[in-house]
Amino acid sequence: MLPLVVIAISLVCLVILVAWAKVHPLLAFVLVSAGAAVALGMPLATVPAALRKGMGDMLGSLLLVIVTGAMLGKLVVESGAAQRIATTLVAAFGKQRMAWAMALTGFIVGIPLFYGVGFVLLVPIIFAVVGHYRLPLLIVAVPALASMSVAHGLLPPHPAPTALVATFQADMGLTLLYGIVIAVPSLVLAGPIFGRTLAGIAAKPLAGMEAKPLPESELPGTAVSILTALLPAVLLVATTVAGWLVPDDSPAAAVMGFVSDPDVVMVVALLVATITLGLARGRSLGVVMQTFTAAIGDVASMLLVIAGSGAFKEVLLQSGVSGEIGRMLQGLRVDPLLLAWLVTVAIRLCVGSATVAGLTAAGILAPVVASGGVDPNLMVLAIGAGSLFGSHVNDAAFWMFKEYFGLSITDTLKSWTVMEIIVSVTGLGGVLLLAQVV
Image 1 (tube, one colour):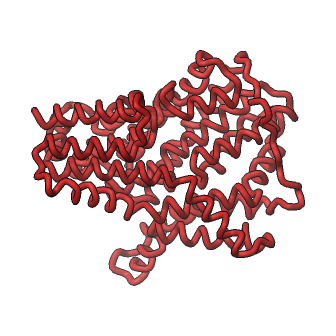
Image 2 (cartoon, one colour):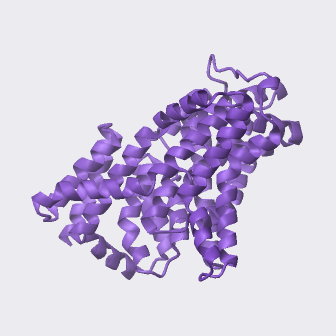
Image 3 (cartoon, helix red, strand yellow):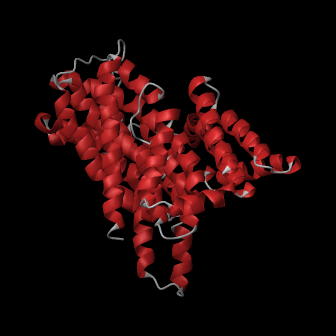
């Protein structure tokens, strides 16, 4: 039982360092991982190598996908494609169905954009829509942000789902396909339907936050904007489905295996975007590359957090505790997918960061997946859903929502926190239902 006590203490220390002491998660993971390694009896000389191996293995499988995803998202924003998507959908749906238009906008824009970037992008659009149609602010805002949250927690190429796919050796295309199936009811319930109940909450735009749209003449076309933004998802799903139709021993199978690789998919999507949203719009290659360089800064900290989680996972593996945890969890009479969700929820409520919660839970639950008996793609989604549960005062996104929309803490809990709970619980329900089918 002693190793399990060490891990429990390590998790408590991780929570204290991240949530209370405000230590950067990378440093917190490294310190906790090193301390856990020593306490678990690993030879001192092997500890640094274990930490390096864990960080290297984790980043090696994720770096290209995450960085190219950030570059694509940045180009979608700066080219005006995101603005074109939003304005087109709003015009098509009309005032009476504005909440549905914003939910669809948040989902389409949210697939290629990281959450923080997407939040900052959508908020001015939300304020502009509210000002034009004279609608209650949260009725417009919550559907858009609920959709963004669903994409952030469930859909590759977002960092946490992508890292979980690598950890559990899941199939990224299949995980994305399952994730979209689960995401739709989650964003509908947490967005347009729940948003209707928030009309009585007095929200107001943050002072000085005004939309600064590009002129209509500078925006790319609607079809180009939507297809380019969704190209990674389209390619991943298409190549996954095509792979089912190709015999394993045929020459086409080898080609399909190459083109369906997430790294290849993201590079192809980025090259297409460079042309459609860059060169074809009159931008020089140098200007497009400047956009890509700036995008790296958007995800640099996230990459460090992911690397740190790899160090913790490697300590669990090399110390043998990972196997012991797996045997213990397998002995519990709880559905492994429900168990994964509960473990992740507990960490999320303590730590605040959805990414840290998901990656920490993955290290604990990896033996359960490795032993078989659970679909690794669904495990990714169960943990992803749990990582979104109950955002509150220890989560930066909670404070962003509060400040941008001029809310009290109480009203933020009633709106933002409840929205995240609905997303998480609905996501879990979708995972459990899907587990009965696949």
